[in-house]
Image 1 (cartoon, rainbow, N blue to C red):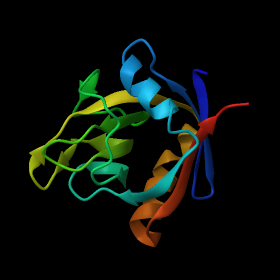
Image 2 (cartoon, rainbow, N blue to C red):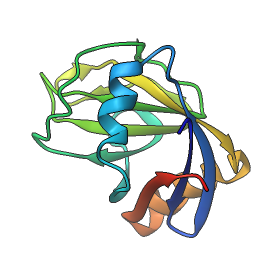
Image 3 (tube, rainbow, N blue to C red):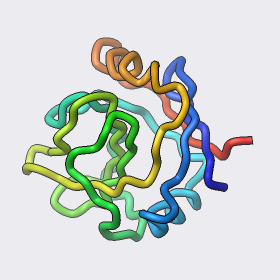
Length: 138
């Protein structure tokens, strides 16, 4: 199961797990699927939406970590100096929180529906939190 679908607000995206680069993060997230949350616009990072997950523990450390994800990258910040979160970039991002710059594990890449990433970001910014669901592709 390397491929997955993401439903976010009215949008649908195709994606793939980055198994070779982040195997532990992919396995930990896969065990949580289908994964449902709410996407809200980031406060400090730039053009991205995030899923705040509080003290949720995926049991992983850093692997394939970056602070500057491309607009099709999904990161898992495993917690530490800030809360656990998932970040989906739709434009320019410098991943950060109120405590400063963060790095998250790039473990999913969006491969389909890319033309709707910015629209999802604007929807979260202007209309608020949107439901988001990650599940296995058929």
